[in-house]
Amino acid sequence: MWACNSWSGYKADDEMVARVGTAYLYRSELAAAMPRGIDKQDSVNYSQAFISKWIVGQLKQQEAEKLFSQSESDIDRLVEEYRRSLLVHRLDKYFLEAEPCGEITAKDIAAYYNAHKSDFRITHPMVKGEIFAMDEKFRRREQMLKWFDSSKQEHREDFAELCRKNNLLHLQFDEWVSFSDFLSNLPLLRTSRHEELLGSRKIQKIQHNKTLYYFRITNALKVGDTMPLDMVEENIRQILINRHRADVIHRQEERIKNNALSSGHAKIYNQTENEKQKTEN
Image (tube, rainbow, N blue to C red; front, side, top):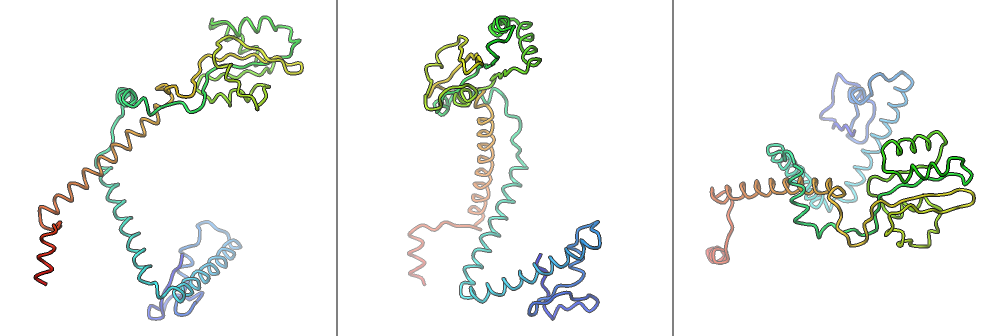
């Protein structure tokens, strides 16, 4: 944003629109920064804001140069470190693009999982299950309970359809969720832990005012249990990708280091050589 031209770089065929000391902002630079398709009034407002920001930027730069002139070497060092980090980052990216990771198979993921099961432990209870609620006077209450407890596909479909038609609460947790998130859908005291519910796979009932809540935990994991593979599959995939990336970069770093050492472009001095150089100097 901070276009800066000294008097020695004055453009005879360009109109100056602002100046701070010996720094100039030209009409062509303002035009280049202008968004395309902007209308006349917005163009005026944008120009005023751009010029104001340019002036402030120049003034802040000049003020900083006055205040920190004695630490110029530190600034140069930081700039050089930033430049070096950018170049190294680009080189690492080049290495990685030349050796893409390729497909990570289910076999790769399973092998890593089996070798590192101790790294995947449950830190808070997790469950799968189902919840639904209805008014205590709902006329098809017995039928709903029968379908809710059925394993037949047609009964399950009829149950879900009746929940939709009557706007009944029906929540299915086919993926692992935290036990606390599951319980948040039930009228239970948050001050209690309710771990005793984890052991049952039967339909359980809670009545709150005139509403009946039915729920069933179909699977549960307790603190310290090993996470199932489906829970950590994507994490393992990312671990394997990161491992590949680290291996590629390390291998390339070793290659360029060994090439430099063997060609004499780089050298590691031992203590004897250091002492010899000091004596000769």
